[in-house]
Structures are given as C-alpha cells and as structure tokens.
Image (cartoon, rainbow over all chains, first blue to last red; front, side, top):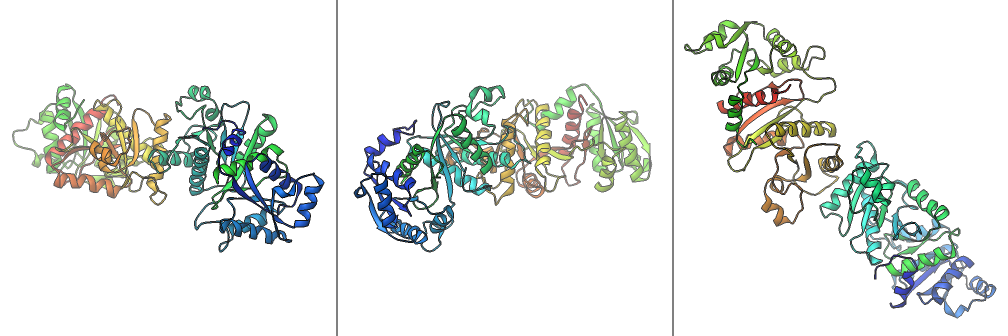
Length: 300
Length: 302
C-alpha cells in the first residue's frame, strides 16, 4: 500500500506483527504518553528503560495502565541509554526512542564505537516526513536536524535514506528534488554543483530506485507550472516525493515554516544506525510524536 | 553534412571563394607544398611572409608567381607580427604558422593589443579526425593547447567544437565527455565537472548540442558497448565530439589513431577572431592540406 497520509501508517502497522520499541530514559510524561498512545492503538510494543518509581508515578498521574508497558529499571539516565542500546543489540527491541535524556547523551550512546548502534562508516542523518494540506502527497525531506552542512558524500547518504524511507512507505521509484536557489547549474554554488553531480550519479545507476533531478528551486520542485515556465520539463517537478536540502538552515526553516504556516504534520526519525531511532522534541505535537513512532515502526 | 575530409576539401574548392592566408615565416618546404596544393586547387590566395630568397628557392619552377604574394621580412618575430597585423586589419582571412617556434608565433597571436584573441577568450584546439573504422568524422579537443583545462575552459572547448561541427552540417552534435569510466566519482575530479557540464547543457546554458559524460571511448562511440553494459546515454554511442579531460589523453588518442588507425585530421586553433593554423611537422601532407581547407570553412562569415 502506498502511503499518502501519515495516519495511513496506522492501518498498515495494524496488519503487521508488532515492532518492539525501547525508550531510553522514558520517565517523563511526554515520552510515556506518546508510547502509551502507540501501544493503545496497537501499533507497537513498548519497553521503558528508566527509574521505575518515576515511571509508575507518571502513569498514576495520567491514569495510565502501567501493565501495558514492559518496564526495565535503571536509575541513571546515561546508563539507561546504553542499556537501551544494548537491548537493541541483543535483539530485544526493533527500534529506539529518546526519553527525557538530553539529545547529546542519547546520540553518544548510539554513536559509541564499541557498544553503539553504528556500523563502521555509516552516516547518521535525520529524515522528516511531512504532510501538508497544500500538497497532494507526503514530502520526505532531509537533513533538517543532524548534519549542519553535508558534504557530497553525506548528501548521497541522505538521498539514499530519503529513497529508502519512501520505499518503506510503499512509494516505488520516488521522485527526488535536489534543492538549490535556482535550476541553473552554477559551479561556484556548492548546492548547485553537488545537485548536478548527484543527479548524474542517479542517471548512471549509482543511486538506485529513484528519479532524481536537480539543481531546482523550491518553487519548481513543488509546482510543475513554475518549472515549465523556466523551461525544465522533469517528472520530479510538481510531483516530488523527496527533497534533499543542501544545509540544515534551509531544511529546518522549510519544515518549521510548513508546520507553523501551512498546517502540516510530521513524523521524523534518525537513520543510519542499525535500527531507526526516534528523536522527538518536546515542542512536537502529540500527533507528531505518534507519527514518529509509527514511522520508526514502519522502517524497523 | 561533411563526413569525410576529402569532402571538406571539395567543399572549399566548390565554394568559389579564395581565402587569403597569411603564412608567417613561410620558408618551409612542408608548409609551402600544402599551401601550393590549396592554391592550385583554387581556394586559397596565399601571402607568404618571410625570407623571400629562401621562399623563392622552395617554389617549383613551373609555378605561376602571379598567384602568390611574397613579402620579404627576414626576422621571424617581425614576420609573425606582420602576418598577425594583416589578419587583424582584414588584409588576410587566416593566419598560418610556418618555420617559426610555436612560442614566438603564439606570443604575437596572444598579444593583448595587437593579437587575435578577444579579451578573456579561451584559446583551445579542436581537430576533426577521419578514421576508417568510424562512420563519420570525430571532433576531438583539446589535442594541442590546453594542458589541464578547468571547467570554464572545458565549456569553451565544447562551444568551439560544437561551432566547428555545425559548420560541417551537424545541426546538433553529440558531445561525449571522456573519462576512463561512466561512473561519477570524487576520486576522478573530471567526472564531477562532467556532471555539471551535462546539467548545463540540459538547462540550456550550453547550447546547440547534446552532452553526456563521463563516458569511456567505447560507450561514446559504440552502441554495442552501451547495450552490453546496460547504460542509457542520450548520445546512443554515436558521438560527434570527444572532449578529453587533459592534453595527454587527447594528444595520445589522436596520435595513436594517426599511427595505428590510418587516421587523417584537420585541426585548428579556436577562440581567435580569425582561424589560426598551427601544424606539427610530423603530420602527413594530406592532413596539412585538410587543415588549410578547414581554415577556409571556418573563415566563412568571420
């Protein structure tokens, strides 16, 4: 099934064996409520790693049935992160979620060379799936949160993550737009030059399973008319599934703009580790948190 | 469309025009033979500049000296300057190098005030190769001038070669950007530049041609190799123009074909306001004649 709305993930997950989520330092109400919702909707099974007393008191406070969770007691935040990672590595969980622990410590546990979740040479990156009322399909974008200024190699990795995410959401041969300020190939503008290189690599089959076009301005990626006016006739224009952003500022501004001004929703995950990792922010809506968990379950 | 160098010469003969060629330091047997052949075939009116005594001594006894203009300037550097001046002042249509060092010759061509290169223009070299095993001419750049062309110089090489191919009647020449492989790899910097050049052509920033690369010679010129490897190329293994990443590769390619592949060529300096002929002495009599015919074709409309 091709997913074109985020809540369709729920329908798909309902038909599949449940994936097991491990929440690192899952002791706060935000994490526990999101996990609870996901369990209630029968999307996943959840294990909370953290201080049992805190977990139980949050459950009590919100009237949650704590027996819906598997609770692993660990009183120290940093240790609970490494314990959660260890459980993943031992096959006791299918994906990871960040709890109240700082992003720094969470990432450190993932990136740990000996007992983390990274394969040698793997690139950790952030993928966001957005749903906007003003666009006819989901938009999968990256990297809006982890790699500030990706080099060519990192951009290739991000492009592949976007494609894989699309594939796992049932979108075959996704259309990928490579963002720059304009469609002209301008050698002195890195985003433009890199886009031309990545587009050629896709043409040569070095990036597989997608139609890749760039450099393109955002208007041309999202609107076929704009592209045609400027003389670019590509199947990507106006029908893109994925957008590669050249830096964190542009990507971050894009997703925040459509969230705040265009009534969009999102789900986001970290890719590149052995399993998907959920990294929600406390500022995210309830919906977004649930979508992020569902997205990770889809990809796990 | 011209597909053979003999057709190029025929076209020059049939044009009914006489192109005025100023030969700098003309006292060179090879040069004079080639120029006389073109003169006798009626499409060139030569101005031989150099040591008049030496030039006269090289002319065959039966030559009609009315067909030739000879100017006596014995100092090679002065002879070159005079030849360049004549071309600049439209007293000649083409400049040709005779028995003078390339350095002295190019110095006069490149002179900022009195030379033949417009400001900021890139000077490059394109030659049209005729190879018995290929079904048409193959234009190759840069076999002689640019050692390690950067991106801008590569754009100029493409534009010059496209302009030349179009003069041969090829409306939308197919330009192959040559490397050792068709894959794009940061460890081969030219493959990154090629990606940009392809996209520039796609976006209309480079006009009048189809561009694809990186491609190796097989994929550029042999459809069978393309289908064996399962690679899609807009050129379909039917390239008209090969752009090489550097002088060594381009130079070796054409010399290899001259030596082992029974190739003939016609080559020209590009980027100057009027055509400039610089030939290596080791080139065949025929190739030299074709260079002159090519300069006549390219001088049209300049």
